Structures are given as C-alpha cells and as structure tokens.
Length: 245
Image (cartoon, rainbow, N blue to C red; front, side, top):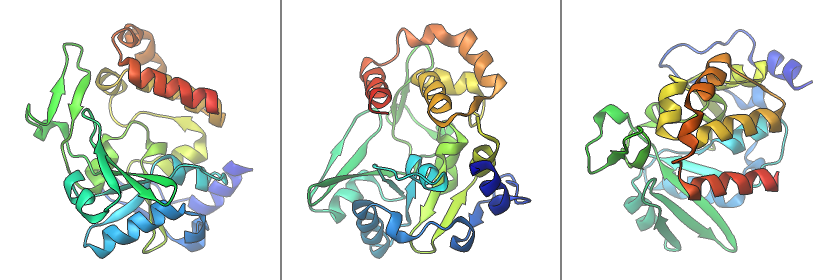
C-alpha cells in the first residue's frame, strides 16, 4: 500500500545529482499540524533570526510512511553557540557531535548544525582513530553538504515549515518507494567512520520491512570486526532504540 502511494506521489521525479528535489504539500500531504510543537517553535525562532531551519531525519521519513513520530529533530546553519544565544532554555551537549538541546515546556527538542565535507576539516574540528572512526566531527556546512554527510538516504530528508516542502538530495524518497536501505557514498568508508551504522542498517531494515542493498551486506561482512572498538555509549544508545521499538 505504501509503495503504491509513494509511486503515485513521486513517480518520474528521480534525483538529479547535486540539486534538491522539492515535493509540494499537495503531493506529500504533510501539514504543519503533524510537526511536533517543540520542533515547530525551534524552526520558527531560527528562521525569524535569519537562519534556514528544517525538520530532518527519522521524523520526516516516518511522516511520509504514514506514521506518527515521537521525536522531531531540527537542522540549521546556525552554529551551536548561535543556537544557544537564540534559545534561553537550552544547552550545548556532546563532544563528538555538538548539538543543542532546547526546552519547550516539558518537551525537549534537538537542534543540530548542518555538517560540511570531511575533506575540509582540520584536526581541531575532526579527529579520527587508527581505524578511520570519527572521534570528533564538528565541521559546519550547508543543507546539501549535510545531506551528503548522513548515513542513509532515507535519513537525509528535510521538511521546511515555511514552504511545507519535503526536500531531498540523495534519493531518499526513491529508496522509500523501493523499500531499500542504501548508504550515502561508499559503505566501507561510512562504516569506518561510524561502525554503529552497521547495526542501524539492520535495525532499519527489520523495523521498516526493507531490504539491505548488496554493497551494504558486503561491507558488513568485511568490516564486522570494527564493531569491537565501537563506542560503547553509541552501542547502548542503539540498543535502547531497538528495545523501545
């Protein structure tokens, strides 16, 4: 049913390299009333301050699939310090990935800064270990660069509350229609950066009933030993997500 719906909505509009694909509300049907209030307020405040701000990731994926997400994340070009200056009730957390937690009443929203290309990083902003795993990654960029830095196309979807558009750069809508989990870029490189992505890929496939792209399966078979030195905190976070689902 979902495949047929997505086929009607998005047929014939294939991703063209580097250019955003804009899907109007008349086609995807996601209104502002379906966005979490904390994410909605965060986007409004950031846009009023002159920063582009969008809902990103799993919430957009879930809305397209007809689900009701519990968590809504926001991404913007504002740095964590700039975000902190806009929201009085907020705090910067994290070292590996610096993000801002914004309090809205009793609710908590997460705001991240668009990330840029790893090639432009310096050792003060991006640090790797001997396995190629990212220990610190705070290189800022724009929306297109942020999409390219994410793990899977289905997690690189944006929703703009100002235009009601779904925005994508790397074929995420097509992957939702096909029911497939792919990596953005080379799976070997992406799993070296963060081995926990292997666990996430399997979890998404099981949770959504999707299939794994063959290059992902091959990369997992060759690089499964990287899970040994993976961050315990990151693994625990993913295990909790699995248990909650």
